[in-house]
Image (cartoon, rainbow, N blue to C red):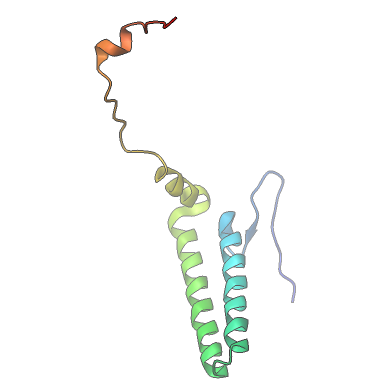
Length: 107
């Protein structure tokens, strides 16, 4: 079975409809699910509980990643996260008179 990773000149990578940062979210999430699965299994939790956890969490990850990709598009998620970093408004508590008066130099 051969999977094609389409990356044209100047284009972002796309795999099965997932674009740009969603590929990293998808791959990192699956790696995290696998690590948690292995830790649970090594801790002695029942095998079927580990398999059920892995299947449910991997399915939820796939569904959420494709949903975010469809909802926000290629750059929309980064724009949304960047918008949360900016303040809604700026507060300046200095009076206008104080802004325009020169500071006295101390000798």
